[in-house]
Image (cartoon, rainbow over all chains, first blue to last red):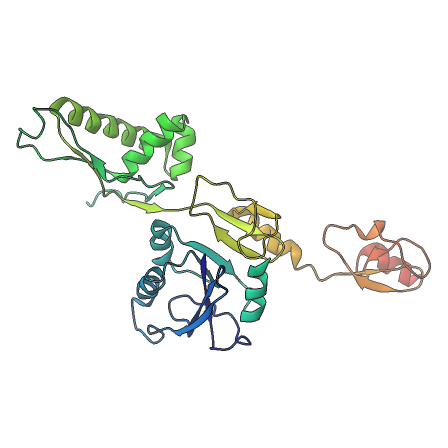
Length: 105
Length: 197
């Protein structure tokens, strides 16, 4: 199972990004192989359509869950139809390493 | 005058297929196009005849009025009847709908999540694995937030010891660790009377 987390930077000390479409980095974590990958978001400074473009990026990597602070109105039905689970975490102080630890349970 | 704006219908389970095709030697000989069954009509049939809800319950699920639901349902049956009698295809698409899923809240890590696989029940939080997950609805959520941000203090009328008030725990049931008397809410009328004496 693959989980994507929106991040403000490319280290484990970075905090979760509260936006989905225009987040700085996506952290992709594979729960089976424990592989962690940071990918910069090409849609960070997009004027419009950042959300759907980011969904496309996520969908192309067969991700099952996304952890972010907020999902926009265009994104929710899209992710619903792709059967990707949305997890909304409204804690801007949470660090990436904390979230990865939580996912270990 | 423009017509009354349609309320967007909520569809919680989109169909798994895109439509139906007739079969048999006579099928496909007519030059008639497919019947277009709208998503909201599919949902009406599903709620009413598959989940066996009455029209009132089903209308609440779709976020529309009961008469509107009955009209959608009647139109769905009409379209299916046309397709059966005339041997036409049914294509399920279109309609003024939005897809929504149920949301859940985990009280351990405070996250919110949806359940894309509707067939499976939700038992564990996908983030922290805790079993303290509850179905989330918007009306109760606002009350919760208001209650939890209670920053009152409990005060002991005997020695003046103060401690943070715990949500859901009456101050008058709390016992002061120093003088073993019952606590009071700081700033409440009873508390002030005591200080004046």
